[in-house]
Length: 346
Image 1 (cartoon, one colour):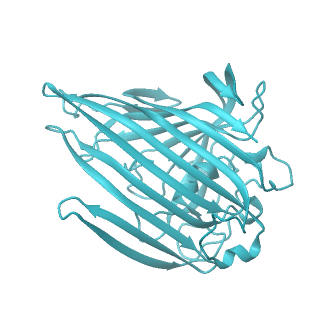
Image 2 (tube, helix red, strand yellow):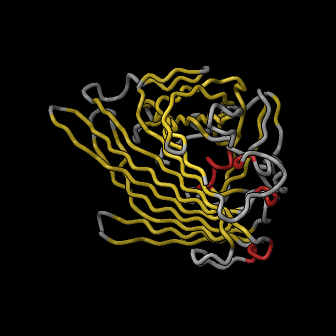
Image 3 (spheres, helix red, strand yellow):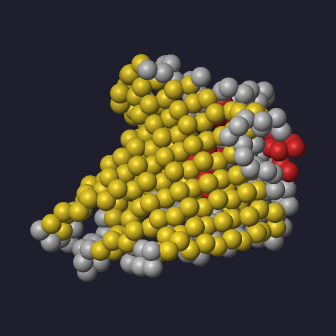
């Protein structure tokens, strides 16, 4: 996802999916197999899905008590439109698959893995002071995790990114961010490596850190949206989800709440295994943000709760809402809305 401060609603009743400080406990807040239609059996090698989302910006998002409306402090002469796609390719593979080039002692505990590739491609047009500028943003993730019986424990993640942040208070300026991060997880520690391109020096700056932890007590940031498809949280309650992110020196805790279990999401011209149709999908609404005094704004994910026509219930994320801010003063610019447009299963 784009690098803006983001994060959710802390409900009155708090459940725990691990703890946010000290020693973490094993996660017990996940459904074993919701993403694959439920049931007790784990997905076998060869199971695959491809999901595509259309992405657009709304400057006046107002839904279910969440308001992400353009701030009056945004530079008045600035207008913008942002569109793009977000694609998710998931497959269940054997650990001897040729793509598994990393080494982790966690591999001893499994035969099959879940492998996910995601790619976000955005085109942003900015109009200000009588001129126009177009920016393109790309974020690509690859990650490997265990299945639900092992709490979707991460093994390896990799992110490459090249995007722009916007300052839009008393004028408009842009700063390009480009780099790569990797995280390798073993049972008692994980190592995060970063490569950041410095456009002033034209050099790549590197860093590395290793943190102690216990396996099955956290997820990695790259798998977060997949994890939300499988999380068990009741309406008006919240779970705490420890999450490793390269942005922080250690894991951070996300509070994940359910603000509605009766949402209806309109999907126009969605393609289901090649057949286009209009569907209204029943969903629950989840929100998440950092468990912190500087938690940022909530992000919203709508997760399918029932079969509809030929769209089987695989706990799909059918809609995702991400507030975005200009960088300098964190003034809200609106919300990026991801709407499911194509589904393919095998």
